[in-house]
Image (tube, rainbow, N blue to C red; front, side):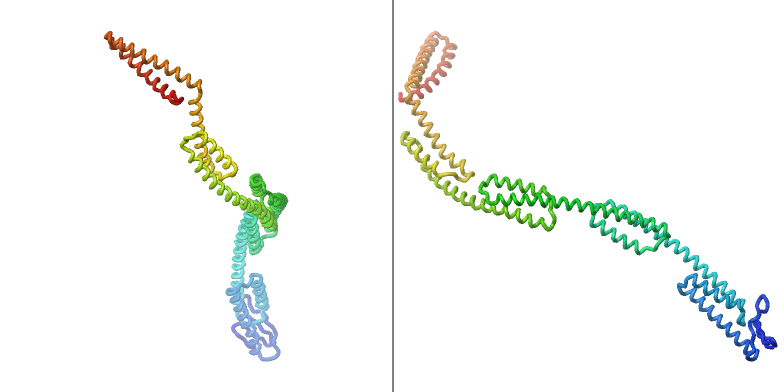
Length: 409
């Protein structure tokens, strides 16, 4: 019989291992000496020590899952409990127990970490849902659409929650996106309808503008173009592929009309400036009729100049008041001369003037006589009062005499 601190071999070849619970049969050995039997089973023990050591390092230094670690521990425990090795099996059991505790700690840590991650993921998804539901009401179509697409990418990068919670949050998130897409689709459909209506309206405006482009009714047509421009602005924008072409045609029709009008007005302005030069020459000739010494000749000369004036035509509007004022001044001078001549040659007016002069002369002579009598009587106050009356009558007499002179008398 051969023995060892941790095992022995009896005379029948049965190998035992010593444990805290007493000896346990390891196996039977018939092929060689007892020493060889103990050496074989001790190598089996050393193999278990190596495997347990490797597992301890894997648990400590790698991300081995708790499930896989538990399976590995249980597999090694079965080998230890099978007592097919000679050595301190109780120590191996203690190491496996300790290793299992470490695995359980890791399991709890991972469970807590996963719970925290799930809570964080839930909070993140709830935030995404809240933002999506807010964006669903936005009318910033491009920016909101881009943001919603970015939220989807963010959602995909978050871990899944439990099925019920994840499905509920995804339903809200998806509903918000669908609501936004529906509103955006309706908006652009309405916008397309408005742009189509604007296109049709602008087609009509273009047709009107092109129909007017050859008009020579300058004032009313220019006013009509201004009305068309106001209608164009009020019509709104057509689709992009039509807007530029329609505007080009609309503007081109106006350009044709206004270019033609500009050319006509330029020719008219040149003609009116030439008319102004001719009228200035006539005005200068008319002004040479003043002062009037021969009313009949002045009247005839002015009439001839006025006929030539009327035949010339329009002058620039800004020059009209001044040039016409010069001619009117000469005309007024002739009219005043005619009025003076009429007064001078009118018998009735002459008689009235002579009669008034005579009456005033008699009144003046009478007052002078009364003044002399008052002074002779020593009535100075009466004399002074009569002298004041005399001064007024004398002034009237002087004016009457001057008027009488105009009649040649």
